[in-house]
Image (cartoon, rainbow, N blue to C red; front, top):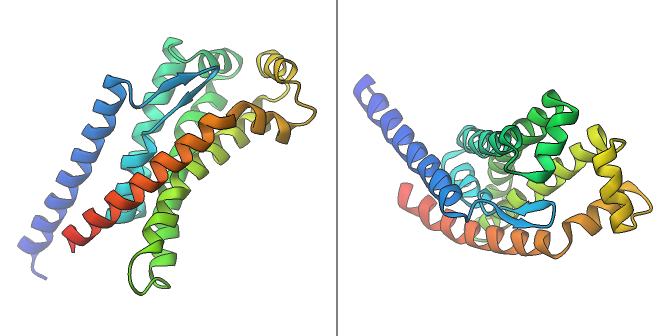
Length: 204
């Protein structure tokens, strides 16, 4: 591959990545990115992250996850999100890790999972679905896991623990995430798998 071909390929990659970033921002702007459900937000921003991570690779997934995280951190700083806004008052650093680092790691991991599974999926079917389901699944796991790790003892979280009647951190996560977590998992995962497979075939 000559230098011009490499430049053209890099330009196409950046253009596609920019398009997915734009889709994330539009989804956020029209309300699909963060649907308030109690103290949490049901987010479908993992859908374009899954598509990018699967169709374009782990680095693209990490970048898109970072954009999701930056939007989430902005909501924390401005107080647009009740939960992360309260946690920001406890620790800005841990809130940054919660919002940005966990989402970046999620996007990276989705791309790595797909690369690992694609070699086993000769027909190119189930690996897309499983990898896409990992996006909302890992997002919830990393996000809630870090809340338990860094914020479980703070007054705000303990207030939620008492309100939910949780007897331990695991039960707290289950009760807080609830049905909205299942809906987010299924909708984002299934749609992400279908779209990622179509986009992957188009890009080949």
